[in-house]
Amino acid sequence: MDAAKIKEKSDSFVKAAASVIVGKDEEIRLLLTALYAGGHVLIEDLPGTGKTMLARTVSALLAGEMRRIQFTPDLMPSDVTGLNIYNQKSGEFVLVRGPVFTDILLADEINRATPRTQSALLEAMQERQVTIDGNRLPLSDTFMVIATQNPVETTGTYPLPEAQLDRFTMRLSLGRLNEEEELALIDRFMNDEPIERLESVMTNEVLTKIQKSVRKIHVHKECRRYIIRLANATRESSGFRNGVSGRAVLALVACAQSYAAIRGRDYVTPDDIKYLVPFVWAHRLAGSGLKNESARLLDMLISGTEVPVEEWSR
Image (cartoon, rainbow, N blue to C red; front, side):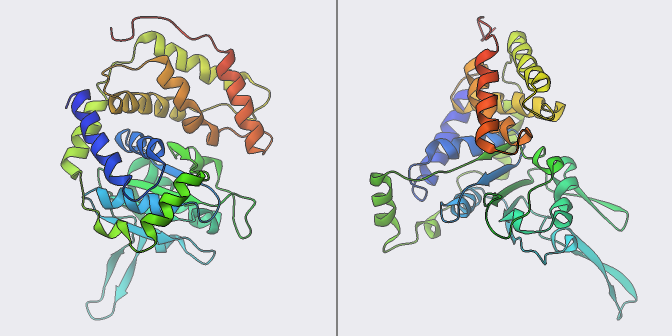
């Protein structure tokens, strides 16, 4: 599937999602970017800003199965992955699969569960498999976690472990609507529930084809060097305890390829990379613990790194 066709499919998806989600077309494109890159998305914002509605909308537009877990302090790891239960009638253990066996997993308010339960998703997110009683069980080829979380300052939350944050391809924030957008929101939901009218616009087969196609989007050697220079800048900065990992570098490459295709190009530009860095890397960088300060430091590193100038389509 060429870039023009991917853009056409993506535009149709965004248009359908915009019939429910007001004023967040770019956030929808970014979520699609992570989906095409085979990654997972963490949506972080204050309660009531539409995090869960966005996740539900995207799931409704994909033809695959979607299952939801409401994360709570008493949730156990086996409630996520499943477990073997002894059947007295047959005298055998029977596997009861957890909600992780799906195409799209909505992990709602993930940081309200304990770190032990949060870690139940580590293997699933990285290797697309879970291990139950020593048996490795594969997950869907299009398995994706869309997690929502409230800011860590919110009462009753647990910070996500760094190992899990590194497995999220992107972190998005929806923010507040302006006055006109909020009026449109009232008009849209006052007498109706538009999400109930949504029909899928992308099958698993089409999604798989897009995921394979975006991996062929051209990334010029100087763009690859640019990504490495940015990564090394985070590793050498005294403002971060650790720089970004190799996984983060690969995630940025994959997202740049996906975003270029969504924009209708068969090649990546440095502008794609600069634009995506905060979404792909900011949540992975542990600085002073202040999110705004970490974002400011990252912006400074991006601004201070030389941008290559080439013919990117070759």
